[in-house]
Image 1 (spheres, helix red, strand yellow):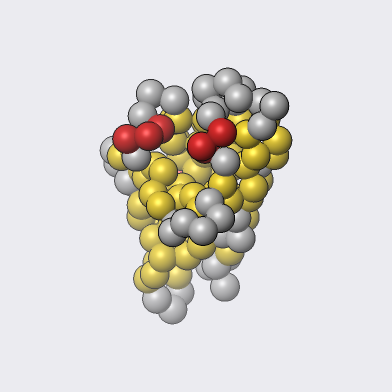
Image 2 (cartoon, rainbow, N blue to C red):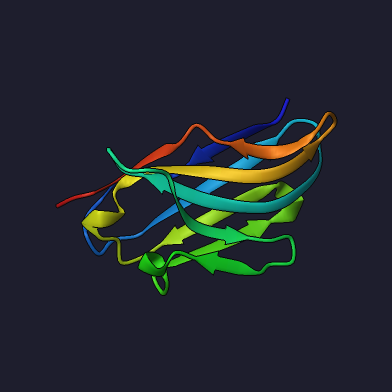
Length: 119
């Protein structure tokens, strides 16, 4: 059984920073692309940033220059450094990873972590 566990969400003032972490555990043969997605109330889940096994990254236009995604493959962990946070960044942030487990390869999801940006 593969699990993704996020941490690091919380309340921050506009202009502040947060770091999100997501660690994968279980019987994992290989982790391919890892990423962060977010969903605000009434909206669909949107891509924030993804990172490949080779370290290539892709960001949503709305976060370019403010957010940085990174990964520690030895720890099966992906991070999201969020700077200059805006009220419109407020959402539930989900970690997603393309993982080959003992039984299959699929996209796994974390449970989500709330990011609130408010003064």
